[in-house]
Length: 280
Image 1 (cartoon, helix red, strand yellow):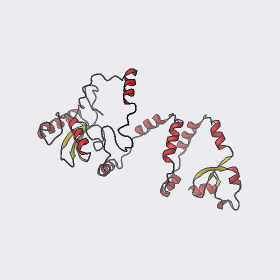
Image 2: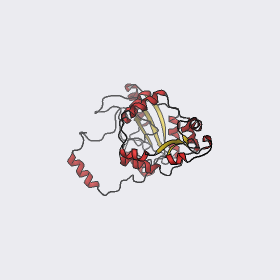
Image 3: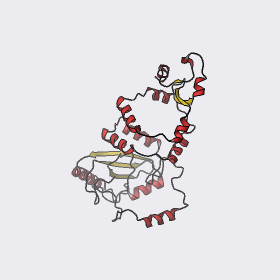
Image 4: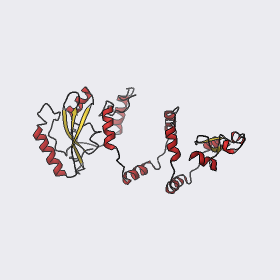
């Protein structure tokens, strides 16, 4: 995110950081309004150096600034004191002032026309995506994070709680989102064969919804119609709880074929006292 530049005249709370390449020793001084430990930097020479020598880097936060003038003053003083542009120890190509983003050379930021989009699509047709079968990479960071970087990010974010505003924004964004049948199949395929640990099962059993959450879920599903396909799938089935406390569905014949005292049944009705004991 760009803090302030010719396109967005607004200052955001900013981190000034120093990146050091752990193998070559090259340094980079920069600013970001995001997590400085997660952000690799944006300098052209610096990113080229990372692509060549790898992303094994250390991060030192110089400071966190909410005042635009103070941020600018500290950044420029540091840049001049360490001669970051001319010194071979630094990858910076311009003086860092703590405000501007990198120069892109573009002056027109309007979206592509349909004709241009078609040309781009035809030009890339048949090409294999650069990130195919790669995990944990982005266009700016083409190497997966090291264990050291992951540990630093974990320590930096440990104990942080998202604000109520952020949670509400995410909730509002997800509400009403329609999941296509294709997406459902992909999710199902991704989770197929995965074994849920006993620890996770225990956590799920201990989760109790509040009255507010129950009301919210009820309101979401109010008025929803069950499709004929779903009705056919559920036809002749009952909701039960097995001996491990897991909710499942079985046929009525399977449920009625059980004999002996109900507390010894493999499956019990999901609203019965025995089911509550198994789940809790």
